[in-house]
Length: 427
Image (cartoon, rainbow, N blue to C red; front, side, top):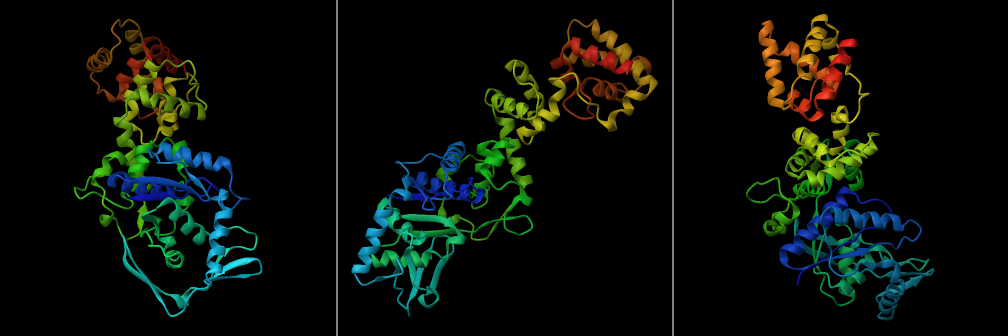
């Protein structure tokens, strides 16, 4: 049975590159009917924090990933590592020096393996110095503890980033020392920014938590991270991790570095927002409203749902929603500077005054009925609709752009629309 693992270190938030590694391991396990395990790399006792671990596990769940079996914590296995190191010392394959334990690397050898993504990789042992297994403070080194724990977990395949390629021959040496068959290794090219540099803050956020806070949906972020390493043969781009499971093949993974494009992610997120039911989006939108200082408490869900219907097709991230829709939730919204000219012309104010009176007497305040009033008004005066619509949009929303004016008015309701138009007339 295929058994893979993801090994987060609880010394910080979950990085996008690490999240992608987790997703591909999960994909492979689910595709092969195997097991996806977690190994918590918390040997750095000073920097490891429970709050980071809680956030990482929460982010994995948020991305839609579930794991099999209880996570293995390396911090609880120091005695095991020391015992395994002592066994190699007793076998004459390792030695002690200054309280540390070193593995004696045999010179004149070639360590070779077939990488699942890059093909054959080989390294001469002359380039590898004797390996520390146990540090002088009694803690294990990364490469040694990896081998001990992956053996304990029965790991069959290791999918990880290209930054681990240099670690692989060192780990293979340890497997051989214990008389074990190494697992299959596959190294994914790293994620770069659009400028070809290492992914950093200037390319967008680097942690999953930042994208969650910005109002990205988990399936959109997971979808995009999958595309940064693999695409199905049919060229499909929009697919949840669950939809990718039956299609995924390690042999089809990209062996070149992927470039992170925030605009492509925003496009994908918009696709998922459009498809998402309002019942799911409402609590997320309320959180964004609270973060933006908009009063979300007391806003009826059915009213918020109507506003969502107008703006779902215009929103790329949910964090954009409060600024785009503040006029639906407050009366003290600000008029955009570039649109004020629509309210300063005397004829515009007169149009608004007369239209407000007509709308005040409208019993059917549907968008179709409102539009009919506007069209009839413009036709009576022999003018186009624009000189009437632009000032009305500014009066009711303070914005030059947004959802359809008449649909907005219907949601806002007659009393608020009329009051806002009259307020704009009176300056």
